[in-house]
Image (cartoon, rainbow, N blue to C red; front, side, top):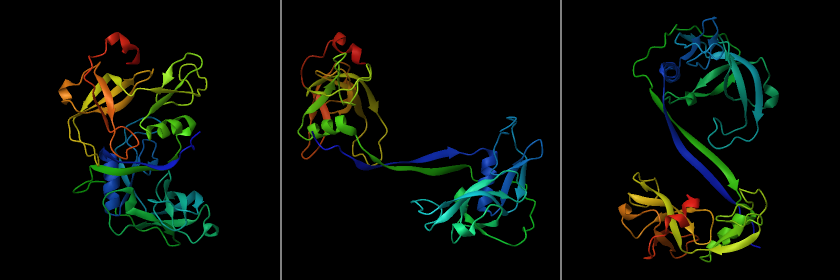
Length: 313
């Protein structure tokens, strides 16, 4: 039995979104060191502002300036900040109700320690030195004992308003494929493909998951499949992926390996993209030192009959 594998995994991508008039004004205001809320029909002021009343669903457009000072309503101490958080030293996550607002804004509170933070304490915004029109224009909150500053009465109209943002999304975690997939990956290192057979329905699943998705029973019997297989369905990729050294267009396909009852996916090479078809017989191509096939190429055999793979579509 091979060792169960585990490895750090990072899922990261830039999330791009456009802004409506309310969010545009709010973020542009932060760039100009102005905090804006939105007023509801019952005279509540919501900060951060939203475009629709969460109670009545009424559209909201009446922007109003609030103070950069406020009161902590609740908080939690973060003793070990993570990458990308507002501060790299221990701080408090705090909900702060700014003066003039009826709702609280979540942000970091820079304080010497948890014994210096309390519900009801007065704080103010510490602005970032460089501001671009994002929530990070508020560097954090800091303790403050002074009076609220005089407001300018800003109406929310700005020159060169922010109309869109790019927010990086990232998830760091440790992934373990489990017993069944660890055995599958171990076999791939020897240029073999193994699945597991369900003891009830006798179907062979590749890659194995450790349980039959149809019967819900555990699987343990290993079955070597392939190496040849049949293209069941495919797509033509026309957009080049970042950090992937493959010229477009290329074909990505579902491939039913001989002896398997579940199709896996792989890239098709060795044939023009516009000649790939359902039923095409293919075989894996391994590169030196690789733990998995680089791509699949045509075997030269006649195409498989549709009836032999229609249940695997």
